[in-house]
Image (cartoon, rainbow, N blue to C red; front, side, top):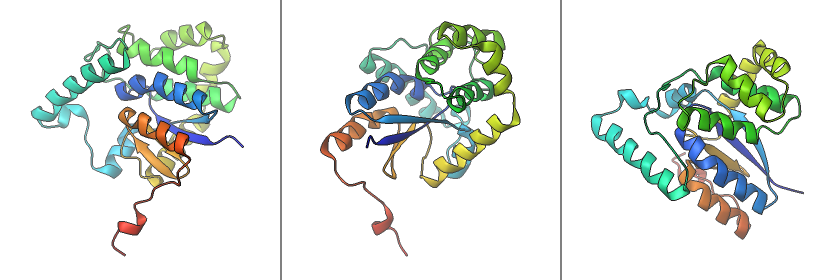
Length: 211
């Protein structure tokens, strides 16, 4: 039986964008299924004690810009570290991804388009027209998916995904959970690849925590 990785992300996240292609390649390499679960990043931050970039100390803001450039170079991906439409509300984009999953479609290609729309093409991913165009470009019916994304059930699923990510100890996004072990950040994809290749048991922090 093929293993499954829970893939926690949000369309807002540059590191989700930078890790997306590499994660898909690892999943294909090991014949692993990706279970895509968009989340509320602020919900994760509230639990982990993190804060949005604009509220971080200046030294951390500067380092974030270095990291974005460094990772983009390492992954061979285009990136504008300070796009025109950022920060932006990712809820509608996330809900369209959930709507695709809920109707049995593979959202991975569409997700790549939405990530690039924000982080490469200077587009507003909260704009219905922008999302409709990318849905159509991936062969989906935007007149079906966008109304589905508006349904309260999509927001409820995103909230549930957020709670699941918190329960899995995801500090932020992207987070990949394999057999209960969480890998936080696109820079952990190579560790995830190794875990799949070696077949090692999942690691846990539980034995080292005070009772």
